[in-house]
Length: 216
Image (tube, rainbow, N blue to C red; front, side):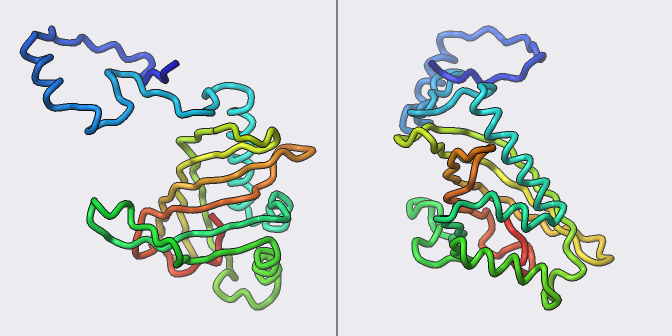
């Protein structure tokens, strides 16, 4: 069953479609141009969980609560959301020609952390030598476009989401902006989920913030 794309509450009168218009559309838009697109229906990917379902809402609530913990500098509590076998990484992005893909480097990363290295980073932030984050940055994380997919493991789901992070520091009126797409593997926990994998695909080739003493 497809996912219907529309704007609730907006009813626009559509002009009459002639045979000529239909022919032009068929010639201009092919399956190669817009894979999976037919009219106003986008086909759901295999394993995709329906938006508004109980599982989708649980994942959305988890991501919103996680963002709030980070925005309020509750790093030790956030560490409790990370699985023991965590992999947390952000590939470097390069500007490449369209035929070369999206430009994410398969080997170079801005960071590639496991649970042990993440624990060290958080302990450093809580200490007296975190000069880049004392006073701490003021951040807001806006999470959207959340899609959830089942996996072969009954206690794990894959999640794709968009993130927009705003960051300001000290008395500067300027805001840094960091837009990205996140691919997560979430694992069921006694309460909520834990993050087992997170790969962050940043939009920028030159990162729009001076350091990554923050978490995405």
